[in-house]
Amino acid sequence: LSLWRLFEKRRMCRCYLDLPVPRALLLRVLEAARRSPSAGHAQGVRFAVLTNQDQRNQIATVFGEEAYLKRGFRAWLSTAPVHIVTAVSTEAYEERYAQPDKVTEPNDWPVPYAVLDAGKALMSLYLAAEEAGLACGYLGPHAGPDLVQMFDLPEDWMFVGLVTLGYRDPEVRAKTRSERLGWRDFDEVVKWLS
Ligand SMILES: Cc1cc2nc3c(=O)[nH]c(=O)nc-3n(C[C@H](O)[C@H](O)[C@H](O)COP(=O)(O)O)c2cc1C
Image (cartoon, rainbow, N blue to C red; front, side, top):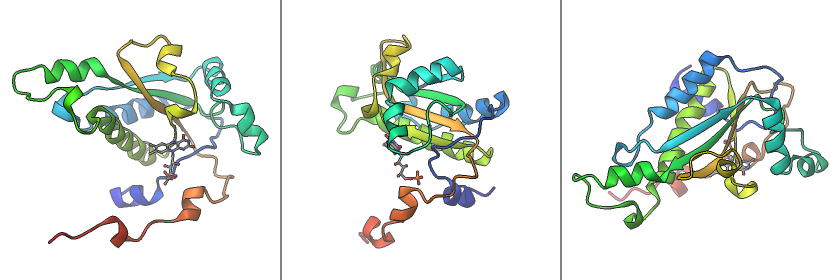
């Protein structure tokens, strides 16, 4: 698929088929994320991947899937075949920015570059998934407990969200909220300064 087709087609997915994701495709989407740009080429974005049903249920429970079901939604987290706990390693940035070619350090940054890097890496992951016929969802860290702590991942990892990955259930055709909202006008989003 052309890149433009991927931009058009990609939507967050919260309804998956009960089908595992082949390992080769999983590796491919993670590799796309690994190759994304990062501040100072620090490459601080980290992923912890899990497919085990018990662990997925555990995540669904702590993120309140039951309340989600009661509101009439279909199960999302427990049924997504792959969960990717996404984090940024603060150590990776501190190490890189302590090197002599760097003049700032992470605490000086006017915006959190590590978090920007995570956003870039996830967009690459989403598009690679779309190209592979897969779909992704994203749940912000506001929505539940710190999964880095819960899974005993390295202490310097900062949890930035949970990505779900799998095959979209084509039976679910209701328009998503973003489809109902549509896109802001180009001129509202882009200003020409010269
Ligand atoms: C920073 C960020 C946080 C988000 N948090 C959530 C979330 O907690 N739960 C959720 O269902 N979707 C979440 N989303 C998905 C957005 O709702 C979705 O990307 C947006 O509505 C546009 O829809 P689309 O990606 O399908 O085009 C988040 C997306 C981003 C970029």
